[in-house]
Amino acid sequence: MSHCIHLASDLHLGAPDTAASHRREQRFVAWLRDAAEGRGFAQGAQATEIHVVGDLFDFWFEYKRAVPKGGVRVMGALAELTDAGLPVHFHAGNHDMWTTGYLAEELGVQVHKAPIRCTWDGVQCMVGHGDGLGPGDGGYKRIKRLFQSKLCQRAFRWVHPDLGIALAHAWSARSRQRGEVPVGDMELEHLVQYAESMKASTAGKDIDVFVFGHRHAPIDTPIAGGKARYLNLGDWITHHTSVCLQGGEARLIRHQP
Image 1 (cartoon, one colour):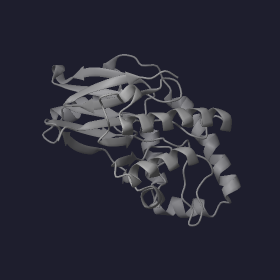
Image 2: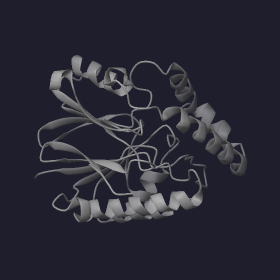
Image 3: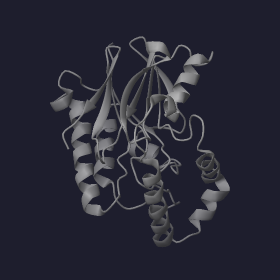
Image 4: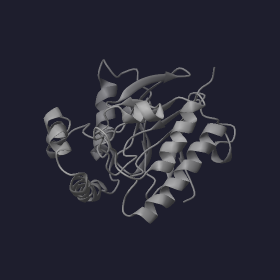
């Protein structure tokens, strides 16, 4: 059976305001349904799997009996797809790492909190959000370890949601602004460096394609002397891009906003 994998990331639903978020959400729901049904941009490329590769939400936290408002259109669409039997994977990003079971249980998605390796049509791929990988960014890596701790999550639950979510959105806005840096020399891109180091290692020498998000910058570049490729998914705030892997070939797709 030939595979057709559609991947996208970095919607940041909820930012910067409800109206803009709704417009972005509606476009992405259309993308999901087109990919699932093999129509529109996906004509001749009907999905056998869909991967949402992190930062679907600008902030996400699962309280014991509540979740943040918003995102109901995309969550309904994801549930429709999984109910119909289409495998959908959710890769937690740095803005929506605090998922503890609700998305899997309610939407039927497969949740990943670290990069995964898959082989599709003989092509070995690594897929993940990409935050905290590669050299540098020591401050974020320390914060991520703190945020991933059970103690931190329990403490946040004691903050009233009206205050806690407002504070989290303010932090998310600053984090997003710091992360939106221009694409420069590929040798200085942390995720390119990570892919290069993986390709040079025993553990990653057989990887053919690295697909990450996080950078908000659509990139398709050869690495390791042209023996592998690195693709960044871009985002749905500015670039409206996705990646399709079909028949052993990976391509970056730019959609009309």
